[in-house]
Every structure is written in structure tokens, then in C-alpha cells.
Length: 196
Image 1 (tube, helix red, strand yellow):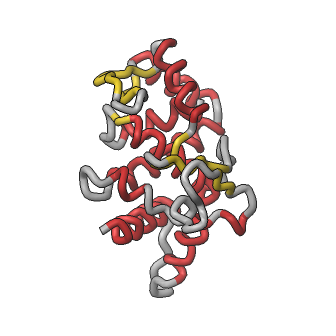
Image 2 (image 1 turned 60 degrees about the horizontal axis):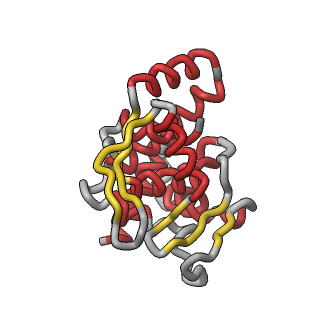
């Protein structure tokens, strides 16, 4: 359900059809920044792939959602590296399932709120740089992490993304008390500056 809600958040923020590279980065950011919304992410680690954050299980789940008709894949093609590239969007059936789930589940409402805010924050960076910006995330860009290593962030001290976002907010004038949606946008703007 989390993967479907990631795609739904992207659709609501105008990021679809979304390339798979951006999908995996949204999944990663949703995992590493979930604590800002007191949400429990489905994964608290990421594989540092040479092409950026990558979740093999999320890829399989996305393909399953497409087979079930809940998402739609387009622009499907093979790359020179024997991998598939595609763009994903939410189908009408997927949207109906999300709406019914939001109506029936408080958990779903809370996660939709978080993932929509996150996708909106990602969409607020310069168009075309969403993928690059996410690669500068503080948790992901640790210098010790070599390609194909696993970065875990199960413990609060390992959640560098959340710590970074909170640290930036602490540096703001005391009169400014951003709410959690604004914290996401401020953090993404910070990453955008790192990527520049």
C-alpha cells in the first residue's frame, strides 16, 4: 500500500508520469523522512546503488501494482545495462482504491498526508533536478558508503535526514516555527543548494 501511496502522492503533486529513478528516490525519502510525521516507514535501510537509491522489493511491488491495474507503466524500454526503464502513474482503479482506503483507514489518511507533502516538496525544486537533489540527502550521501553497500537508519542517531531537517529549523529565527510540511520543503531546498 505504501508504494501505491507514493505514486498517488506523486500524481497529486504533478510528478507523474514519474520515471523509475524518481520513484525509487521518493520511496527512499519517504523512508528516511517518515519520522518527521511520526510515521513508521516500511524500510529503514537503503542500498547505495551506483544509479542512486534503489529498492528491489519496491520495484517488484510496483510491477505487481501494474499487473493488477492499480498503476500504469509507460515509456518502457531496455537500457544498455540490461535494466528496464519506465514511467509510472496512478491508474483510475488505483485512485479508487486509495480513496476507499483513505475513507476507511486513519493510517492511510496519515500516510497520504505525509507522502503528498513529501512529493510536493520534491516537486518544489527546479524542474528536472528532482533526481539529483534526492541523491544529496544526508543519510544517503555519507562518504563511507560505497556502491552496493547498505545504509541503515533504524536508530534515531542514524536518521541524518531528519536530524538535518531539524537542525536547519533550529537555525531559523525563533519567531519562525515551521510546521512539518514546511520542514520538508526547507530540507529539500537545502538539498537543492547542495546539488547546485
